[in-house]
Image 1 (cartoon, rainbow, N blue to C red):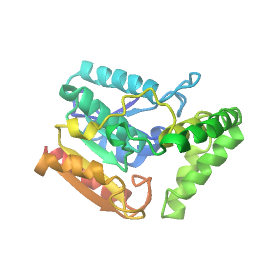
Image 2 (image 1 turned 180 degrees about the horizontal axis):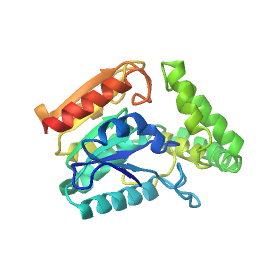
Image 3 (image 1 turned 120 degrees about the vertical axis):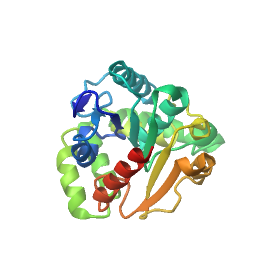
Image 4 (image 1 turned 90 degrees about the vertical axis):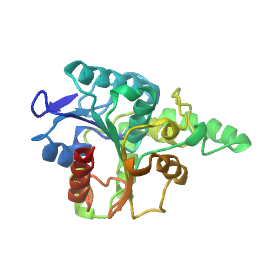
Length: 263
């Protein structure tokens, strides 16, 4: 975990997405560390964090809980900011450990209400027979993992210059588990309690989604969070999946600052 800012300041924890790292929230961490104690977490095998064999969402959640424990040992509960997979982990933390989370900021998070999978029945069984060995083979080839990450990047930004700058930081840190995590995001076994976390969240929550996709991406997520009333804010920004690094990075930072200061 990378730590910035003055000890004793109100804490803010950043959780990146699949294939990300500390660089994923670099603009926001740099902008907010003067006023808050900023913690930037890296999952196993991401960034400079040591990899373990076959790490998955269950392992990442355990690590995120340990990160939360370390922050709570210093004092107040943090705001948790999560992107993509990190948004799912952030929701899980808020649902499972409500007293330890001050509030949430979700940047285009993944959400599977009621443990729903993207594939069902015979189609899912056939897909697993085909894709599980394929994914296992891909994980043995770093070139394949990097190529997959590059393809995902190409579709995740609106601004090409933002994409290229981010890729220069990301391309040397793509974890070998990248194909497996992409597969888990669609239908793989996660060993992760993928419940309808949003229905259990009771803290103020700010949700960002990009305008470059169908909105809302997960209608059930928005519906589940709307029960929070004035404690929930939904914003659509100009950009792709990596909103925090794309065209609206500065606006996203300003919105995060205003929202957490409001509560």
